[in-house]
View (cartoon, rainbow over the protein chains, first blue to last red):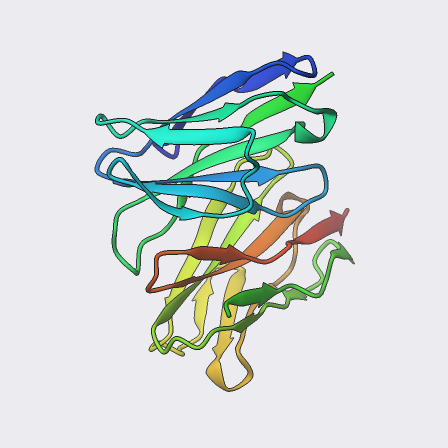
Length: 113
Length: 113
């Protein structure tokens, strides 16, 4: 158990729908990162939050949004879903120090039918 | 610009062979950190090693070893006497002081019994 909790583990939904993925970071970690991994693809950075504020943005679609709450958990909202959004979505957390490691959750597998 | 290149997309070896996974990075920062992560078929991402830019000592951990060479901007990973359980996708990553992580596209390693 990495200490980073992601829910749900699996999600199947239809095109056009909206889903929310949830992430609880490891205790003490202030930063949360979201990554998308499509089939046979590498890790695409979506967005990073630090202590409730957006810190960096990657290749995140306008249909996607995220936030980090005061208790440091984060949610990734995916709307108007398309078939191509089917992927494994990872959350990772770290403490705010250059040497620190990204600790990943087990991922949320989204299937859009 | 920060960039991580893993030129080997897929590698297959027979069990007990040694295998080296290549990682080449680009950065203008003098302080940075390099990482290797393993993603077994189960999907989770597991941290293997972290190296900072001031420490060029090679590291050995059991059957795993890492060769960091600043002169060639490389951080290669060698598995000695490979085992079937080593079959996974391996990602190299770079983190600089800006707190961003840059992942390579991964190398899929298959160890054939």
